[in-house]
Image 1: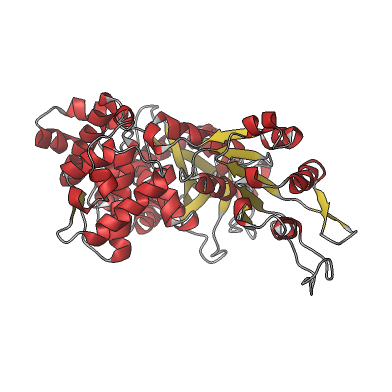
Image 2: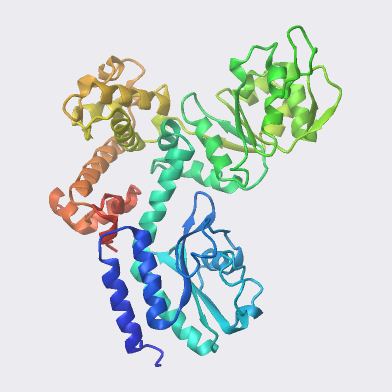
Length: 514
C-alpha cells in the first residue's frame, strides 16, 4: 500500500464507521459497533475504547468487544500503566508485532489468558480532541510485520478522528457527574465551576498535590468552599476509596476536643464508660480534614504537632502508642502568621501545617464567575425542587454582580435557592432576591462593585451562553443571533472558557466546530 493511500477495504470501513456514528443512540453502543466493524472487515479482534478521567487521573474502558465473556467488572489503568496508560500519557501510538515479547502488555481484561500471545499483534492509538489526549483505541490481530502494523496504525488514527468529539463529550459529562455525586451538590459546582484565573489556580494546585501525602493548609474566608477543596483533594488521591473524616475544630468544646481527635480509654474521665475511637483512628488509611484548625487550644496543638511529626499518638487516659497512616488537610479563615506573632498559635505547628498552602479566593475577586455559578445553582435547585426555572433576568443579574458577597459562594447558593423557590414564571427576577441585594450602593460598598470590565464581561458572557443554548451549540448560529461574526464568538468562547459542546441538543449528533 502507498504511504498516503488507504486500501478500498479501509475506505469502505471508514465509511461504515462514519455512518454508524451518525445514528442517534448511546455512545457505548456506537463505539461497540465501531469495534465490531473493525473486527469483521479488517480482522482486528478484542478491541477497546478507553476514556481519560482527568479528575481521577485514571483511564477507564468505555466500550470493548471480544472480552465480554472473560471479565465484566470495570477495567482501569493509571496514567503510564501498561501500553494503554503509556499511549494516553505520551499521546503517541504503540504497535506490538508479537505480544509475547512485550512486557508492558498487562492483559488487564484477562481476555488473552488462554491464547498464544506469539500469534497476536497489538495496536493502540491515542484519541485526541484538538491537542489534548482524551482516551485511546486499541485492538489486537494476527501477528504480522512492523510495516503492515505501521499502515494500520495510520488507519486507526483516522478512525479515532471520527470518534474524538463524542469521547470528549462523554469525558466532560463523566467528570461533571463525579463532581455532582462524589463531592456533593452544594459545594462541588460552587467551587469547581469558573473561568477566572483565581479559580483555575486552585484547580491546578489541587491536581499537583492530590497524589502525594503532603499536608495541605487551605486558607480563605468563610463560605468560599474550603471544605470542597479538601474533599476534591481526597477524591483525586489514591486514598479516594478510604475514609474522609471532617472535624470542625471550632464546634467542639475545648474539654472534649482531644477525646474527639484521639479517642479515649474506658474510665479516662467521668462519663467515659467505654473505649472510644478518635477521628484520627477512624481516618486511618484515608484523609482527615481539620476545619477551623486555628481554633485548637494550646494543649491540642501540641498533640497535633506530634501526630504530624511522628504519625503516632495515645488515646486520652491510655498508654499504648497508636501508629496511623492518615493524610492531614487543614483549613482556617484566620491569619495564622499573625497569631504566631501574637503567641496564640504555635510556630512549630504552623510550619508543619504550612507545607502546601492553597488560598481559596473570595467570590468578589472572581469577577464574571458569579453569573456562571448563579446559572449552575439555578439549574441544580430547579431540578431539586421540581420547578421549571430557566433564566435570570437583567435586573437580577445587575444586583448579583453589584453585590459584594460577604458570605461568598455559600451565600450565593442560598440566595439562588430562595429565588428558585419563590419563582412562579420560570424566571428569577430582581424582586425575588433578598433585600440586601436590592439596596442601592451604600457607603463602603461602592468601591467593591467590581471593575467595569468584569461587569461588562459577565453580561457579555451571559448573552453568549443564552445564544449558544438557543443555537444548540452552533457558534455560527449564535453569531447570527447576536448580530456578530463567528470569529468573534469563537474568540469570546475561548476567552471565557465556555464549552459550547455542552449545549448540543444530541451528543450523538455532535457537530463540533473547529
